Length: 75
Image (cartoon, rainbow, N blue to C red; front, side, top):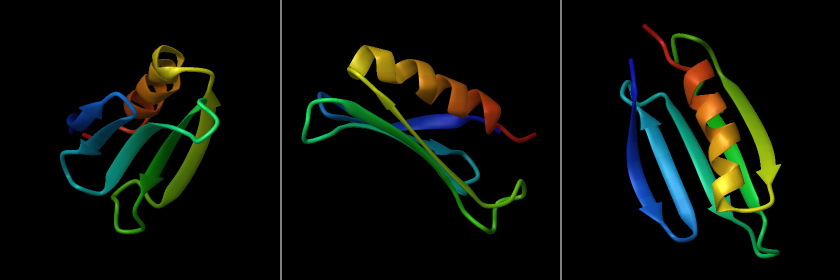
């Protein structure tokens, strides 16, 4: 199962897993850094989890976001 990018603008990027049970969000914070989070619902076949990471800017936020996307694919 893959991911679909559902939003992409200057201050926020969102991906939703195609089963609808997980979401990754990269967003600019009030201080100008970026927060990257994974939220996977309790109903997900791979169970509930939450992960949060930070990055200094938008480009750097794509690395942890990609890692979370890759680590949370389901077949």
